[in-house]
Image (cartoon, rainbow, N blue to C red; front, side):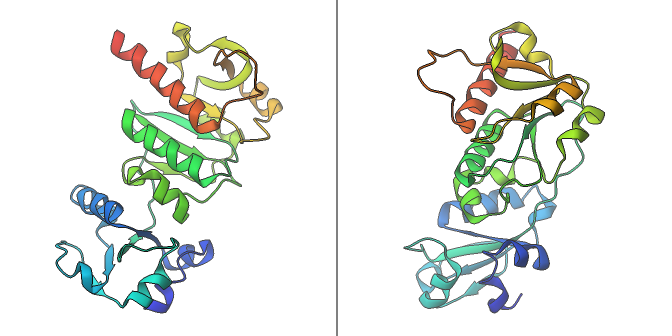
Amino acid sequence: MKFEDVKKLHLKKVREEQGFFLLEGEHLVQELQKAVVGDVRLRGSEIYLTREYEHWQSPLPIHVVTALQMRQLSETRSPQGIAAIVPLLVAPPQQPDERAVYLHEIQDPGNLGTILRTLAWFGGFRCLLSPNSVDVHNGKVVRASMGAIFHVPVEIDVPIDALAARFGRIASLDLQGRHIAAPEFREFDCYIYGNESRGLPQEALSEMGATAFTIAGTGAIESLNVATTVNICLYELTRNLRAE
């Protein structure tokens, strides 16, 4: 890929046209190199680095660039001097024992990146993103995921009304619902979480027969951050399963 195209990968339109996204920083490049061993999707990746990283060892093609060119690639104020382009990640088919976390119109890239880290930590889940959600290949999402983007299958543009045909048992998180500590909380195939400010479309939930659950609190504030909500729920699910 021409350098002029690489430095435009911060734009979603260009990512979709070129079929690549950009990541930067030593940690993320290390995570990429670990993941490429077992993931054929990543083998078209290429690394860009400045002279200070000339010692870098990689099975992937390496391009040496100037400090000015690295600043053109970077979205951070003080680039580390190493970055990579990676093929857009398409989720493989869902496995029989794999459950889903569905995020409805999530907008904050930090929240999505944090949720991906949680899903990668616990394992056994894929992430489904509704239309009008933040792009999973957005630079802020990639950085916040800390490499988890390589380990969690992510499907994009999944309409909420398509869930009932895929999943027999669907749960949603709501202020009014059963407590997540209830034993039946672990029995669902798909768990739905809403937009940071608008929540979930109640009509769609009603039509699919979603069961509402809640995280008990004092009521001192209106709601929890969506990433925090997912973290708590996945811990609860994992704690229950390990206790069996």
